[in-house]
Length: 213
Image (cartoon, rainbow, N blue to C red; front, side, top):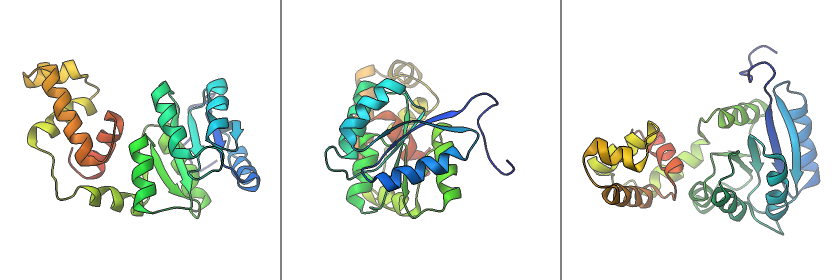
C-alpha cells in the first residue's frame, strides 16, 4: 500500500468509532476496514456507551463525534481523561465554532477534524494521533491561537513547559529550574489558563502549535 505511513508489521492501530448516526459509523468502519494497519474494535452511539465500550476494548485511537443525544463527546472525553484511558482521542465533527473547538481541546482531545475532510486526511489524522502527533484543522488552530494571543506566556512558564514537553515531571522541572514543586505547579496552572487548556498534554500540544516551544 504505497504512500501510507503504517504501523509496524504485526501491529495494528485499534480504533473505536463513536457517532450517533449509524450511517456515519458504517461509513467510517468501512473506510478503516480497507486499511491493513487499522482495525475497528468497537462502536458506540453516544458518549455514555463509549465509556463502556472503551473500557472493554482499550483502543489506541477513539474517533469521537461531539454532539450526540444521550451523552456528548466533550463530557465523554473529560471522563476518559479522568479515568486515565491511554487511547488518543480524535474529534470528528461538523462543528467548527470556537466554543466547540476550545471545549474539546480543554477536555483533552488529541486532534480535531471536520467530517468534510477528504478520506486521505482522515486516515492520516488517525495515524498521526496514534503516533502522538497533534492534529488540528486550520480553523481549530486559528481558534486556539486567538484564544489568548494577548496574554503571552512568561519566560518561566515556557521553561516549565519545555521540561514537561521533554518528558519531565513537576519534580524534574523543579530541580532543573531550582524552584519548589509548588512553584512549578503554579506556573503550570497559569500556563493552562493562558493556553485555554486543563492538562499538561494539551498545554504542550497548544504551545508547540503556537510556536512557543
